[in-house]
Length: 345
Ligand SMILES: Nc1ncnc2c1ncn2[C@@H]1O[C@H](COP(=O)(O)OP(=O)(O)OP(=O)(O)O)[C@@H](O)[C@H]1O
Image 1 (cartoon, helix red, strand yellow):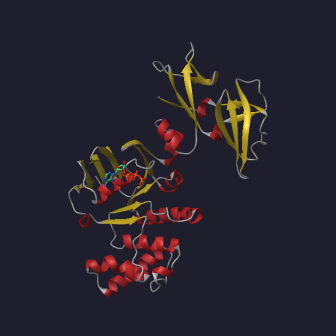
Image 2 (image 1 turned 60 degrees about the vertical axis):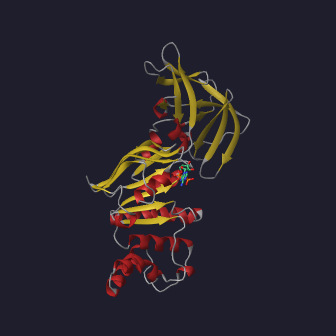
Image 3 (image 1 turned 180 degrees about the vertical axis):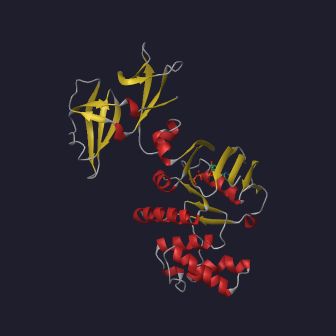
């Protein structure tokens, strides 16, 4: 099969299982984001794919070839790490040419490749600039170009944008994604930023405690989280305990969620409902109601925090969708059953 295939890949550091039997199929040309909280094993997994860390057990295959024991420099990888590791005393062109020189590419070949790469990162004409005189975003792009100089089969990046300020970071996410699409190169990026993963990835791999918790498209991860860990980690959500009444209807915070029933054999569970799906009404005679404790008006969106029987529910709306509710007032809270994702506990 063409692409990257991991089988039962594991890494043990003494008593710590950093990566625990990870199986992953990445079709050729896919952009994957490894996402998860600090310490979940993302970097260790990437370092094993890169050949910088030896797996305790398991195999790594790329386009059908077993790479598990192949040294890093023979894996045909492009890598960018948070530190970038550009040579500050060299020019942009010399930095990009570095891997080409090592490989023995002639002067003419180097020049042509540098020009191609500079065009693809929108830095035409920058070959003779010193990298120490570039902005953070420009340096980032040079590091990407250098990693791609030898047309690798696999592109690996570990938190590549985390040193950039928020605005530049968002612009670079789009740029990186567009470049990857143009080149069609299989790419794996480690990030702990779910917004970054949602922007760039074809496939998001959510990790927790060394294991894969869910693999899916960004939208599916957001809309159909596999469990409470994923629901809570991706975006913000309201996680509510539910239990079945005599008719199997789902009861949350003492009120039935209209149209939602628990399946046979599942007397209890959790329900995840995104803040933008919670509807607020001025009618407090409905099933569920509460007191507004705080309103955060961010201009483009309004977040309303409501205390329902001691639990806070967050609702998000735009100013156009409905007027804001005042802190201290009572509101009706509607949880549309079609927006509720039922999760096992
Ligand atoms: N060389 C090492 N020796 C011992 N333990 C390690 C080593 N490298 C990583 N670990 C441990 O393995 C686990 C996973 O670490 P890893 O760096 O892969 O996580 P991560 O998800 O990338 O975290 P972060 O987002 O903070 O970088 C952690 O408990 C970490 O302490």
